[in-house]
Image (cartoon, rainbow, N blue to C red; front, side, top):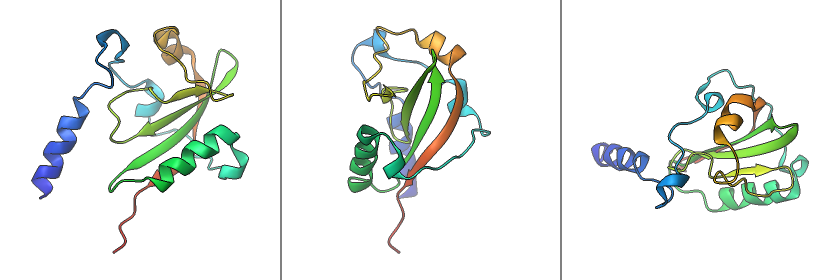
Amino acid sequence: MKKYIFILLAALTFVACSEDEGNVIESQPRFVQSENIPQETVQKTDMPAWLSKKVQDIEENLKPLAQYKVYQGVWKDNTIYYIWGLFSSCYFGETYDQQGNHIDWEKNDFKDFNANSHDWKVIYTIEWKSEQ
């Protein structure tokens, strides 16, 4: 059974988030790969309302083995949020500005984002836990 789960996970990592090849971001930015990201957990009540709702929806629909991290950072002097999911094949598909507007990478410069975003921290973590 573990072999099949591993094969499934491997297959999921190669699935693109979009059929539009121009919309695929090929590697995760440096801050997601870093093990030194500060963890400053906040309560859902202290998040913007739109983000709290997204987190609540994720928690209510959590699938087995799923993991999520909500990152907060700064880009172009604005607070931004990124919701990372273990099984997501779309890097930075869940990136939002402070008002909850989705950041469209076809209209924004991802290379600039990767090079110039800063002050990243993990503000919330969601992990599936076995009932055993």
